[in-house]
Amino acid sequence: NAGVTQTPKFRILKIGQSMTLQCTQDMNHNYMYWYRQDPGMGLKLIYYSVGAGITDKGEVPNGYNVSRSTTEDFPLRLELAAPSQTSVYFCASSYGAPNTGELFFGEGSRLTVL
Amino acid sequence: QQQVKQSPQSLIVQKGGISIINCAYENTAFDYFPWYQQFPGKGPALLIAIRPDVSEKKEGRFTISFNKSAKQFSLHIMDSQPGDSATYFCAASTGNTGKLIFGQGTTLQVKP
Image (cartoon, rainbow over all chains, first blue to last red; front, side):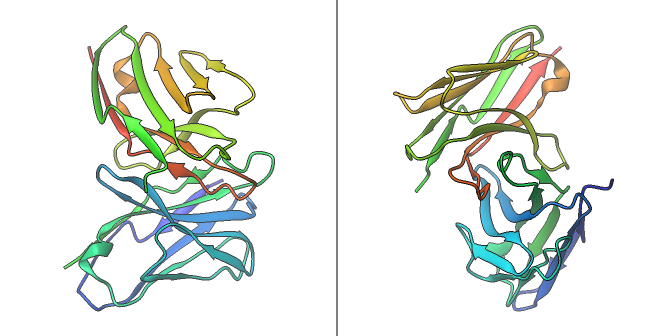
């Protein structure tokens, strides 16, 4: 199993551009998450999904959108990129209860907005 | 609002020593407390976790101590090894959504 796969690994955007970070998992997990990691700040939840067709906001959703049309895929859309969105983005998945808190993370996508 | 506060920010330990990382939380509804380990260029990976109905959990050299009344929990790494050098995150969650609230992270360096 590949686990959680994220693409691209690195990307540089100009202010105002848009892009989609791709995330796919092959573990048949129902729950999927997007986090961003900034130095000294830990990981902050952007959006999450408990199943296909169901998404909800996390702690820091502004400037982002998600969709979940299949169990496997959970893309994160950045509209009108801003320097504040420079970060490392992690996608994660979880089987769900009773081990909901055991998240499996991808290797991250490093985004720079200039 | 930082719901989970982690300290220290960085830690240097000699090989064979004990590494201790502390976390404090505010929300008494939290019912799951994991620790994640992250190596450079990789995503975090679950190391060990505890629920509030027990005060301690041990897995090999790693132990979580949990103090419900003080709303604190800590990670102890016994006989620390250079291969333990990584960033460690505590986290907490409530309910069944798996929405983890992470601490700020601790960078551990174990010197040979």
